[in-house]
Length: 321
Image 1 (cartoon, helix red, strand yellow):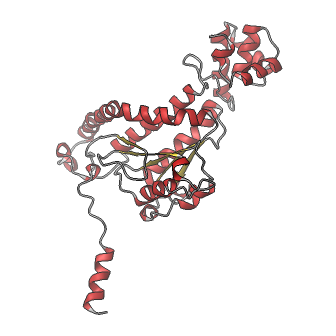
Image 2 (cartoon, helix red, strand yellow; image 1 turned 45 degrees about the vertical axis):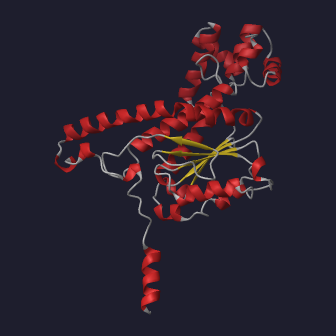
Image 3 (cartoon, one colour; image 1 turned 90 degrees about the vertical axis):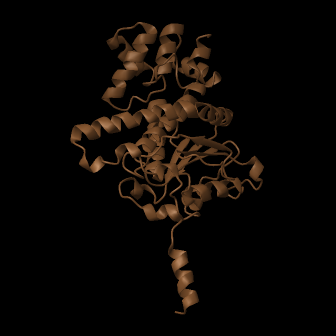
């Protein structure tokens, strides 16, 4: 190997310098972390975690803009797709997997994609995040349309898997849409200040600062990311009629705990006893909204279902609110 080839090889193997990324910088308040007692570690981490809530408050307007852009598309039947690598990807999959039992939304309406596939949920596959084309196959398989929204998640904002995936979506090459302008809404959720990348219509920055353990974005950045995803998905479910008052009226009573919760919701909204509510749920095929309407409007389960379908599932509309 000649000197020129050797230099090219060495240069190609040098990773990008990410020292300017906020989540990679050292925290001056944890410089003596290795010398701290258990109590001191706990106290320091608790103090640092306060930055998470401050970051969420500052990012409120950006989160709101993203939700408002996604809402009409989601209500019209579109999907919300999260994708990321490592902790970011796991949090997206977690939030997506919790929407069906909580809101009885079909599992293909909120989707989580992680670099490395489902195996990466339990076993780290960090090398997968370096491929800017790594998400292309999964995104293509979804046949994305203009009703969909795609949110890339990257704590440092530089993950090639995420940035490349967003650029691919905006290129209009993900499915039936040849026109990128008619494609899905895209967004990037990150914890480090940056300029909005070309592939993202929306940029959400959760500026949580340097981690207690330098670069460990499973800590403050991960916590803030989970809060943001919870906020996005829950607000979309509220706005699409899957909540009444502050009650989980679309809960899927799939185990004993959820059956108990469903009965208590019916009891709250009808003033029936717990036992009566359980019986009514049984008559209404275990559906909270149907059970409530059967009691409050004196209709059959079939009629209640028809009324809900006409009102696009909005219990308050059927009740005349």
